[in-house]
Length: 236
Ligand code: SF4
Ligand code: SF4
Image 1: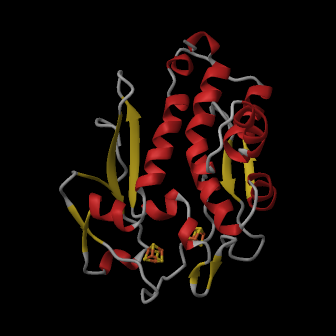
Image 2: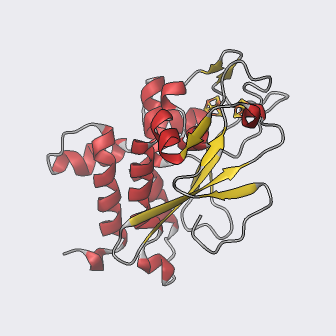
Image 3: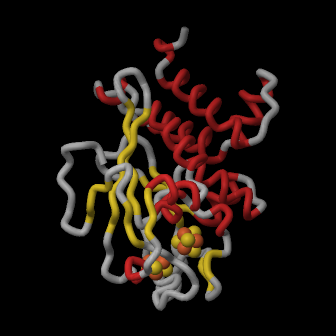
């Protein structure tokens, strides 16, 4: 987290070279217990990876698996993974054998037991710090293997997630938002359509300017395009 922020007792700031003991595998007695009753916020890159694994379009994924909420104090709407309507409020992707979308599991699932806070400096360079989140029900902390941040990021395949999520910060932490800009309802809709559905951006804007590329490569363009749309005075 950004230095100077007060942390709850079960959350410990982790220095870059510090280690923590943790392992999660099918042998832990709590295996998959945490894949329920979650408020699991999805970033645009999370949706992109999940829809690829599931063979869906962004629109189909949002229709089947997402809840879009606009909470008090939020700048833009948030997209959450919809839990199932069963007695455990299970994640739609959990099975007795584990996560059925493991290759495309969201950044929050990959990052735990760490939490990552990221911010941009005045030159637009991203910085991040990490905490360990100790939760009583999680028996992975009793496991022996020692991890450090770099090893965890590598093992969990987090690098492309962190990179894509940091690119979004250029919008979410834009100076105009800090200065009080609040998007209109149609601009909020544009945010969801452009970054989460992605297909409308691809069909109209990207095709019109001849951008032929994978969704992964297209997402940064969509973020830049949206920044230009929302803050046209910034365009060069
Ligand atoms: S996406 Fe996978 S790892 Fe994440 S909560 Fe669902 S089942 Fe668990
Ligand atoms: S509670 Fe902890 S150890 Fe158990 S399955 Fe979840 S992350 Fe793994």
